[in-house]
Length: 359
Image 1: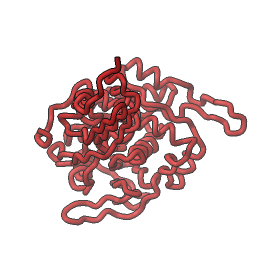
Image 2: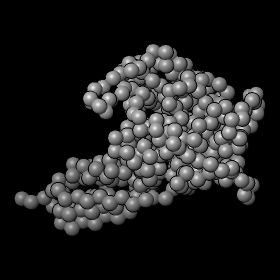
Image 3: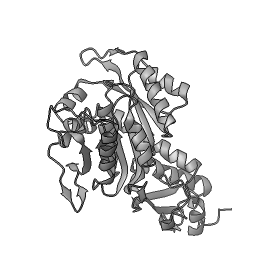
């Protein structure tokens, strides 16, 4: 006896509680099931997903397909279309920044490639399709403008600082405001004022992610950020050797002390793969950050090797080109993907309360 025909109501019922990757709430209550068409054993579903979860669109499409095949026996042909679901960011904190996730990228010490990782995460998220801003909070040694090959000086329009555009990504840095070679000599209150102004008075627009490149060490900036707005969390960058890991542990302790969740660890300069003989050289050791992440119960987001093209692009102001290089891009894409996937998993486990805009 053949199974009864599948109905559109059954498809809806199977998807109603499927979690939206951004909020963790069901697709039905978030009004993200855009269309269902059933023709015999042919099912076509259109689902709206936000650009905040853009790195997970392919994975989510496959998960929806698997769910329907599992819950609706006799439905072997399932097509899932994903369209953009617009959900603007709401103002956060007392400064009114419109960004859905604010992520600080820090390190316990300098020289571990933190700024390169911060810039590459931002570019990777943008490449996936998310709306991203990049803020250089390392006021004493701002390197983001050089890494991205950016010049110019922000100007004020309608009471807001206009950030420098990096191919569609707004960027703000003290490097745009201070002449090259001139040192910034500030005490804590001036530093606090500059960081607050960058957050409050910059025309960031509607962002999915604001990535903040922190200064190295455990100084005032983390405290300023924790007081200015609720950060989504922090990413800690380190290299594999013990001396760097000791400082990374201090950075993690600092973030936890000011109630900033630690979203993960990235191990930079993990190894060098010699282009001449294909041999792997573990110059700074290997696996130290992964082991330390497990010890501290912190997610490990990924590793990046020492690659000559990464250094060359950084020196030439072409760091964004790392995401167009088939040998470099997978490392940065994996880090960005793991970061967003972990955020989605956390929200699916504990969905936030709905905002008034979706009630």
